[in-house]
Image 1 (tube, one colour):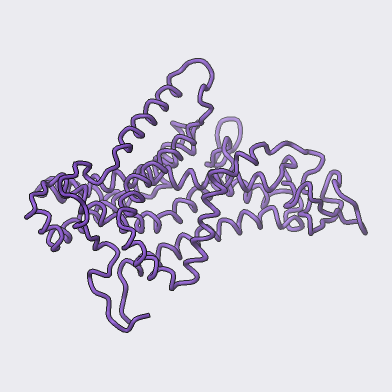
Image 2 (cartoon, one colour):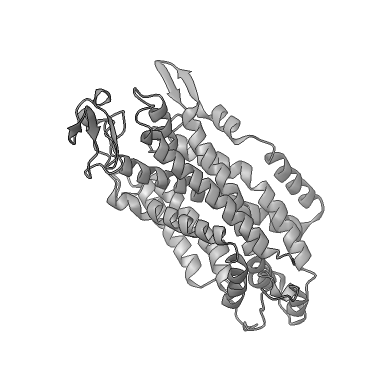
Length: 395
C-alpha cells in the first residue's frame, strides 16, 4: 500500500463525469433499459392473465427473481459500471481483504447455482425405500434405512455415487437436488426483497431530499417507524389470510419493512453530494435537476446502495429459514410457517432434526446448515469489506 493518505478523489463514489458529453440526453440510463422493462411487464401480464395453461412456464417466484435481477442491474450495476477506472480503484482497496475475496467467490457460486442449478437438478424424485442413504464417503447403521442402495459392510449401509450426498429421511429424495433447489429459494428471497427495497428506498430518499419540508419529515418518520416492525410478526399476522403463496408473502413483508434505512441513507448521501465540486460544475454547465440526479447523483450513491442491501441480505436469508421452524395449529392438524410448495434449507433442517435416526444421519441437517452459515457469513464479510472500501481509513 502507498503511504500517502487517501483523498476524496480516490474514493469510489467520486466519479469523474467530465468525460461524458453534456448534450447527451440519456440521463445516465441506457436506451435499451426502458424497452427491456416494458418487455418484462408485457411478458408478465401475458403470463398472468392468459387463461389456458402456463404459456411461459414461469412461476410467481421466478418473476420475483427476474424483477430483482432487473432492479439491481438497472439501479446499481449499470450506474456503477459507468466508471471503470473507479471500479479499479475500488477493487484495489477491496482485494486487500483476502477473506472478502474468498467470500465473493462463494457468493458468485451461490448466484450461479441458484440461477442455473434448477435447470439440471429440478426433479427430487421419491425413493421411499431408499430413504436416509449416506453420502458416498459415509455409512449408517443398516437399522436406520428401509433398504440399502449400496453394499452393507459389517452391518452398515455404504454410500454410493448415485446419491453423492445421500437421500433425506422423509421420502428418499436426493440431497444434492434439495440443496440446489433450496439455494434457488434463498436467492429468490434475496432478489425478490431487493426488488422492493431498492426502488422504494431510493425513490423515497430522493423525494424526501428533493422536496424537503413537511414531505421530508413525513417520509423520514415513516421510514423510521417501519424499521421498528418485526418482519416475522407481520408475516405471522398476514399468514392466516394468505395461506397460499407463503413465500411470496414473506418476500413482500421483508421488502416492505426493510427500505427505511436505505431511504435515510439515500437522502443523506444526496444532500452531502449536492455541495461537492463536480455537482456544482454540472450546475454551472447548465445541467438541469433531472439530469443532475440521473447522471451525477444516483450513479455516485449506487455503491452505497449496494452495500446497504448487501448488509441486509443475511437477515432475509435467516428469516426465510427460521419460519420453517415455527409450528402452528390449524384446522385439521399442524403446519410450519414455511412454504411447503418450495424447497428450502430451513425445511431440510427441520425435517432432518425431527426424523427417526437424526443423530446417526447427521449429514441431512449438516449440509443445509453449512450452506446457511457460509451464505450468511459471506454476505456479512463482503458487506463489511465494501464499507471499508467505500470509506478507506488511513493506517
